[in-house]
Length: 189
Image 1 (cartoon, rainbow, N blue to C red):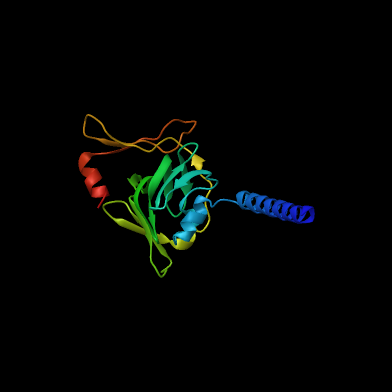
Image 2 (cartoon, rainbow, N blue to C red; image 1 turned 90 degrees about the vertical axis):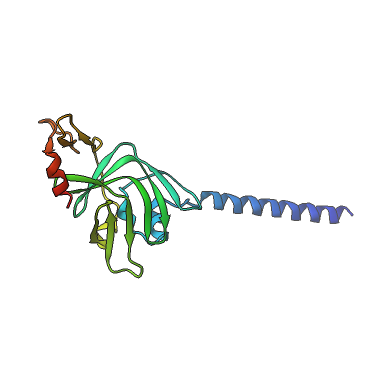
């Protein structure tokens, strides 16, 4: 009887040790990064800037990314990332995007949607509401360094002049671009 009890006790301890080792291995494995999430949804990892650690993602596809501060990254055009970026992921696209803007000439446009063709055509499309701009997909393969900047805002002055706030702080001061009310409509066409 004592021999049988020791055998059961040994078996119990062995199972306990194995389960502890297995659970510690599972908890030490790295959880997916936002770049892994993008890739698993058929999107390039370089859509977001380098070194993002604070993000959330749920089973509905909704995601939120939190940066230390707003920043800009240079691609074919310049992209601006607000401190908080959010949207809904589905395979090959991001819908309901907020917190990301693209510069074209002197104007900044809020990016509303991003999509890639499935199967891939080698292009990625940024929908800014009025138009859709296409870029080479290869430009977004690797996350880029992001330069800290002020927020990019579009304000209407009392004289109906649109002023885009600058993206960069410089030692010589802020740049200001002014467009007349009629010029803005023509610039967006």
